[in-house]
Image (cartoon, rainbow, N blue to C red; front, side, top):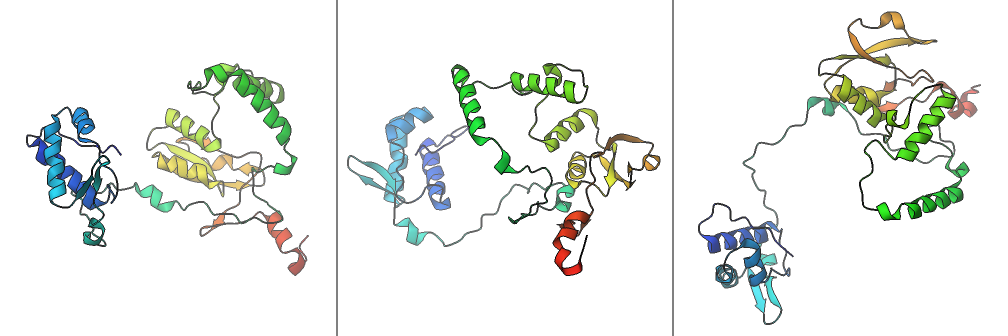
Amino acid sequence: MAFHISLVGRTDLSGEIYRQIRQAILDGRLRPGERLSPTRELAAALRVSRSTVTVAYETLLAEGFATSRMGAGTFVSHQLEAKRPASKTRRSTVRAIRVRGVWETISPPTIFVRARFDFRTGLPDASLFPHRAWRRVVARALRSREMAAGVYENPAGNWDLRAAIARHIGISRSVSGSPDDVIVTNGTQQALDIIARVLLEPGDIVAVEKPGYLPPKYLFKALGARVIGVPVDSEGLVVEALPAEARAIYVTPSHQYPPRRGNEPVASTRAACLGRAKQRGCR
């Protein structure tokens, strides 16, 4: 295994090679039985004479950090396993990097347990997906683009896909646009991240529904925006309650997300009712 050694600004080259390899062995980065680079190869990589590396290896052999086998090479000694302390905490001289406070308030997503009835949003019924037809068209697309394999795709996404999206929204939503107006993202969160980075400055106010979908709220806060919750009624977000200085407003007009209690998501009224139907006679 090639081991990185830095000799920049060093004068005692043999001693520095010895010390860096010795420390790597003590730290466990080089493990017992691992083969050290041949002296000729290491000398060429470090641009030093072979004798310089040989002196370092001889010191490692003499102190028991390495062993040598004729015709096989130099290896980290197995005898060090018994000598090395069971645990040794290394004190870093570099000040630890602190995570921004906003991330301390964000809990990891809840792991959903597989159930007979899944009321999660945004998940289609995979059993209805035409997997066989999909594999066929994907294989055909890969064959037609095999000569371009290994080349970075346009960061906005595949041109044919963007053209198909532009045509679809032109018909279904009456949105006039070309493929150059479309950017393919990895989902809503990435799309909001790009938009927020382009349009918002740290300290800008973003209005969101309260209660509402939480991930975008966390995203805006992580980018330094001030997030203000706006109440909702049966018609959606209450426009009269919007802060006048809001730079952006995030809404989900097609459906409303419920609030949360603690770290647990609260199911929608309909889903909760279905879950309690037998006990309370919900309808």
